[in-house]
Structures are given as structure tokens and as C-alpha cells.
Length: 163
Image (cartoon, rainbow, N blue to C red):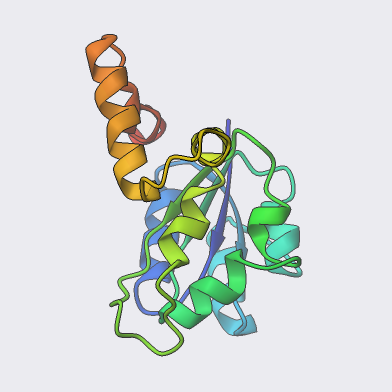
């Protein structure tokens, strides 16, 4: 069974994590509030000492945080999770945050996309193409569809939660 790291156990994250535990998934949980972790440990989750500990060896990472600044702080920079999450790990960022949240920077989504679209970014830089990452991602997806591989887009997530 795959291990899911779940980070952010507030009003939305805790019920989501509890439902995954009820469905039989192995969860390693972390939150800044110890009582939130404890509440899920009694339901069957294992506690992580930090966000880095939670993602260590996880097959899937799920985050549910309250603001854009929190998401950026967690994922980006030298100590951010993107620098530590193993290649091939499925990352599901579920935070319901608005672009106008405190601390939002315009390149945030591009920074998150570079983990999975690193090759596309490198190709664009080497070729001198000035296409923004979002457009480049769309072009790559359209190419996959033409090759008959478009169903791979969300199929990994679907297969993970199909019981």
C-alpha cells in the first residue's frame, strides 16, 4: 500500500485525512498544531516530526494550508519540500487559497510546476522560447493527446483513489 504524507490538518485537512484513513490508506501526518496530529494518530495515522519527515519516502504528498504564503513557504526555497520530495512522487496541493492571499507572488504556480515540468522548462530555456510555463504545459498536454496519451493527465490520481 502506498504511503500518503498529509500536511495541514485544520478545518478542511483533518476531515480529508480522516476519510483517507477510513478508506484504508496509510497516512503520515503533520501540522503545526500537535493536537491536530494527535487526533488523527488515534484514528490510525502515524505522526511525523516535521513536514520534511512526513514526505520522506512518501508515495503521495497532500497539502491543505490556509494561505498562499504558507504554501509558498512550505514548498519553495532551499529548505522547501520541492527540494526534498523524491522524483515521481505525486503531489496534490489542495489548499483553497486565492491569488490575493497574503504573500502571493506571481511566479508561484510556475515554481510549483517546475518539479513536474522541469524538462519543459529546460527545453524552453535552451531553445530561447519565451513561451510562459502555462502555455508550454498546455502545448505539451496537447501533444500527449495527439499521441493518444492524454488520459495520463489525472489517471494517476484516479487510480490512487479508485477502490
